Image 1: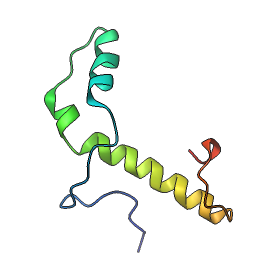
Image 2: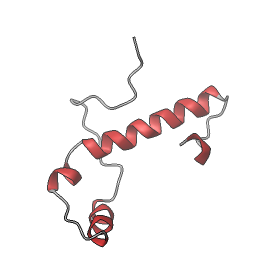
Image 3: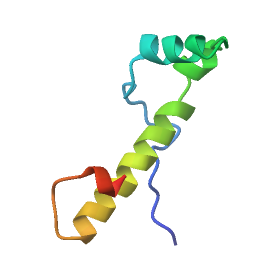
Image 4: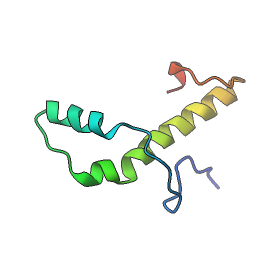
Length: 71
């Protein structure tokens, strides 16, 4: 069975991003931001999944420090 690298849907964690910065970035690309993008768990799940993979890679290489190359 594969190890889960994302947060369970029932588990609630604080956003790992700055909502205003996401909205500003999208607006600068001449697009609008749906509230579901900022309030939903999808973006947070993508971020935590990426970080979990980086953590696993660092630990597999015998390190406790996550480096840019792990991303």
